[in-house]
Length: 118
Image 1 (cartoon, one colour):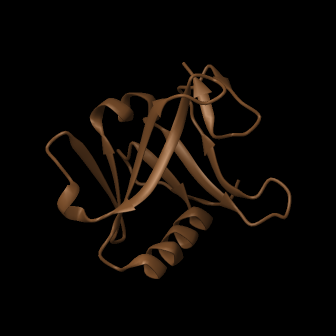
Image 2 (image 1 turned 90 degrees about the vertical axis):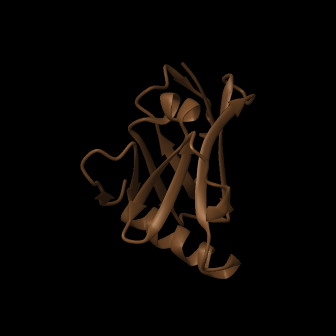
C-alpha cells in the first residue's frame, strides 16, 4: 500500500496514489465534481462498492463530506456505516492494478476486491 493521506476524524482514507489518480480522473471529466463512494447490495460477497463522480449540487443532508485539500469525497450516512475507516488505494500494476479497497468492517471479501460481507 502506498503512503496514506490520513486526516484525523476522516471516515474514508485515501492513499497518495489514489488521490493523485482520482484528481487526474476528475480533471478529465470536469473540475467542479466530487466523488461519491457508497455500497449497494450485490457482488460475490453480499455488498459491493460504488464510486462515481457527481456535481456537488447533489450533496444532501443525509451525506457526509470529506475534504482532502480541495478534493471532496461524499458518502451517504447509511453507506458510511459499512465504509468507516475504509482505505482507498490505487496501483497501476499490470496485474491486480486499479483501485483497491481495504475495509476494516468487512468480515469477508471476494478475490475481485470489489465486494465484501459484514
